[in-house]
Amino acid sequence: MPVEIKIGDRVAWVNLIKQEGNMLSIEVDGKKYDVDLMHTADGTFSIIESGHSYDINLVPKDSPKKYTAYTLYETFDVEVIDAEARYLQNRNVGNGVAAESKINSPMPGKVVKVLVSEGDPVKAGETVVIISAMKMESEYKAPRDGVVKKVHVKNEDTVDGSQVLIELE
Image 1 (cartoon, rainbow, N blue to C red):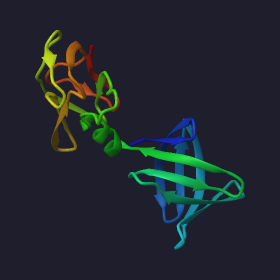
Image 2 (cartoon, one colour):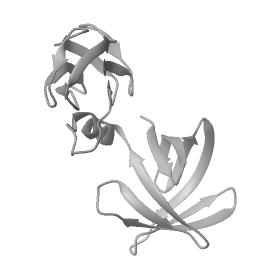
Image 3 (cartoon, helix red, strand yellow):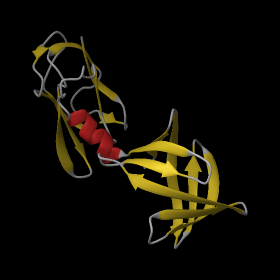
Image 4 (cartoon, one colour):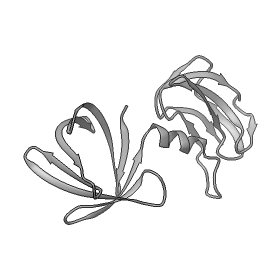
């Protein structure tokens, strides 16, 4: 399953195609790369690709899946947005910051039950749709108080990762 990686202002979709030991075939934004990746004891990643060697030191930040990446000449903020991170973002009911108006599916799955209709008022944290993915049912909640503007799915629909399920006004 592809992983979204934010590096500074750039967003890349990375997909692991094959791995045999340290040798990886990956796809970055649709382009295939064969790399030799080694994670050293001091936290540095040594990458060899097409005869070029790169060393990157990833230092974790205060929240999961966020890092500062140090290369020989530059420093970058990095965030890994995988299925788990998208799932947690969609379950977040806000923390004083203006919340999203769209509720997305973080991964492919099947709609078990849509609990709201267009025009329904909802409260922050109220379950609006239930999705079954990877043999688990997950409840997706309204990120804020509002009114359902659009329901994009119905019971038994198959959904893709990042697909919009419900929009709020």
